[in-house]
Image (tube, rainbow, N blue to C red; front, side, top):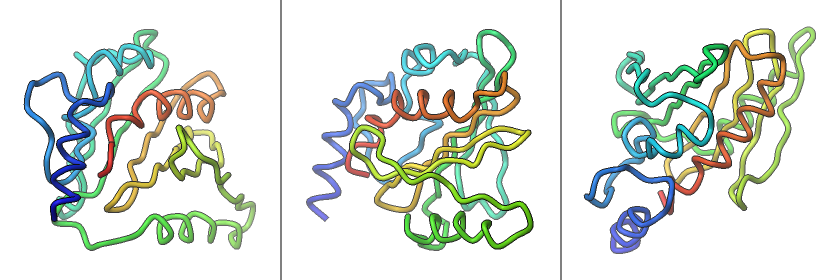
Length: 166
C-alpha cells in the first residue's frame, strides 16, 4: 500500500502528468492525467477532447483530434470497476490474432523502458499498448496518412512518463 501511495505521489512530478496541482492517486486515468502540453507536443488539440462511453464502465476512454484534422487519438485504460487483466493477458489476446486468416502478430517493444506492444497497422489505424500496474494504457491513432503506427509510438513515447509507477 505504501508503494502505491509513493508511486502516486512520484507520478505527480513526472512531466506527462495532469496540469492540476494535485498529485494523482488511485487508478491511472490518461484522460485526466496527460498534460495538455504533452497532447500539444504529440500534435493533438486538447480542446477537442471527447469522453467516450465504454461498456460497463470497465475503462476510461477519451478521444482527441490532431491539429491537422487528419488524425484521431484515443486513450484508454482500465477503470477500478474492470476485472483484473494483466499486460501478459492483453499481449496473449493480441498475439492470438495470428490464428485468424490474414492475422498478424503485434510487435513487442519497449517505450521509454516500459513494456509495450503495437500493431499490426490496419486500414483504421494502429494501437500501442503500454504496461501499467493494472493492465495496459492504449494509445490508438486512427485515420492518419498511413503511418499510424509511427504516430501512435511517438504519442506513446510522449505520454508514457505520466503513468509513473501506476
